[in-house]
Image (tube, rainbow, N blue to C red; front, side, top):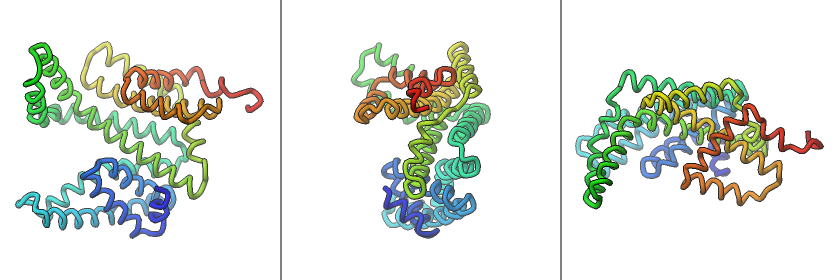
Length: 312
């Protein structure tokens, strides 16, 4: 990964090549899309927002050409045309590259990870609201696929389980705008962190760890988050539930930053960090605890309280 960052920094064409190659690989393995966007983040942080934009544009052209050649040769669809390739890459750029470039530009200008995450959260909240207002039937586009999945599962389920599946399907359809936006937000965060880490490796070793572990979103953000969560639980609105998902992701990041800082302060073995991440993947309650820690830190200041006085 570090060698890849070095290749990206060699020049504009090298960076665009990585962007195009990783975006195409992302069609098969989605995590590669984060690397594609991280390349744009790295160029933007190191060389400025203009160079990041140029890299995105060159990457767009390269990805569109490669996509057309590949899909035309393997004949996935006889009706596949150059305009289809351009449309596919355009949406890819709009959803994956543009948010990463915006976040990298903000971070480059403000040198504030907290501010960058707050802006991303506001944009994500606005995007959720726009989906529910302008595209209220967004989730219905996926009903056919969900019905097929439910039918397959229902063949092996009893009547009670079938009723539960139908409720889950309805919930997913109504929450799809929030799930869609939150997935883009999470991918943007991963790309931003990866690009920032690459930058630190070459220009400020250890800098990203210190920056991430000192992340503090402030009380105003926490109050807004708590207000959204409270309204969602009281009003039981799918739009508010979707907004709640966005702020939960934000404070999950804050909570993990605090966790890393606590392990460093207390000099605990890093193996246990991996254990906690594993628990978060399989036990939702652990994730909620991390979110609670992130929110509570706005008033408790956990890191300051755990730091030995001799180190202050």
